[in-house]
Image 1 (spheres, rainbow, N blue to C red):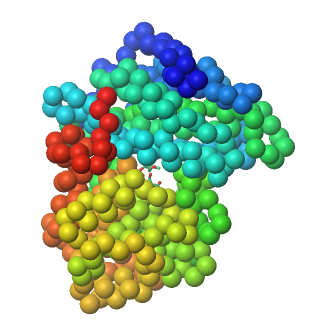
Image 2 (cartoon, rainbow, N blue to C red; image 1 turned 120 degrees about the vertical axis):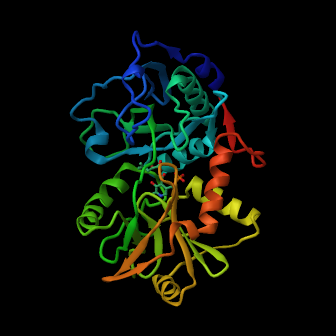
Image 3 (cartoon, rainbow, N blue to C red; image 1 turned 90 degrees about the vertical axis):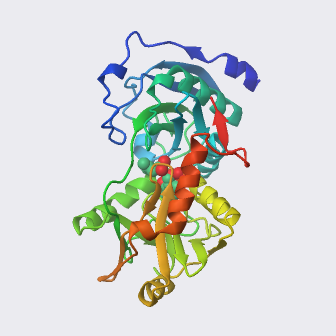
Length: 357
Ligand code: PLP
Ligand code: COI
């Protein structure tokens, strides 16, 4: 059944390419979009109209349910090209699984993993010239699903669109990343939707993030909703602390934090490098104490867009703690290098993380 759907993906190629207008030496994150997109419609309980077509605006009813009640989930992943022109995706099957975890929480239908993989593969093949080769650059891939039904009553919609588009990108952050531990606003609460990559989580983060940016912080470190004493994640990244000889990161048990694919990769690589790893509750107190007694060697965020982003300073209640120079961050520098080599197919892929197009 799914294989029938896969063979039914229609491809309509664009008559002209926007590629000549792209300056690959100056790519900004998420400002330019490749020539094609994938679209599928969910109607009467099944996915239909599977198509790759020219990237273009779509028409929606003003009563489109996603616009009102927020049934909308997304994913983010990247394709890399090596000097030989080979294209690699990093752990795409994990994104295929995770979008369904997010959808289930938002009462949305499953998008079959095999179909996700096939649509992704075909789309990246069609736009393979858009995958940058320059070090630090990649093709960001954005799969997403939203309720498209015309609907005013509050209930799970019966109609959805699943789409994928891509965008050549460079780094997400440039310059130093100074962060503040947020102790007033909350990103996610127990029983809520923090573990889902749901659009509303990002909308809710914008106001506190803006207040933080106005005060000079690039990102916020989110803390638990009940006490603000325990750290959860940093902006749109998971967060890691290298304290003494241990790499420590907040656990996922409370379902308030996104189970990052980069997070899992970093922890796996750290363990293989012989580093002691702890996934547990991480208190603000212990991080502040470690910063003060000199055992806090490194703090970094990790995520698809941000890759590994080292934090330069952390502020907690008006107290700013400077962190070691970026060149001294042995662990994140080493893990970052291993990850980068892996993503470009330059080192042995022991875990089957790489999907070659
Ligand atoms: N946490 C949040 C809230 C995110 O948006 C992201 C980005 O996807 C991550 C963590 C990191 O997840 P991943 O490594 O799978 O990209
Ligand atoms: C990603 O890292 O893929 C994200 O989702 C971050 C983003 C919202 C740009």
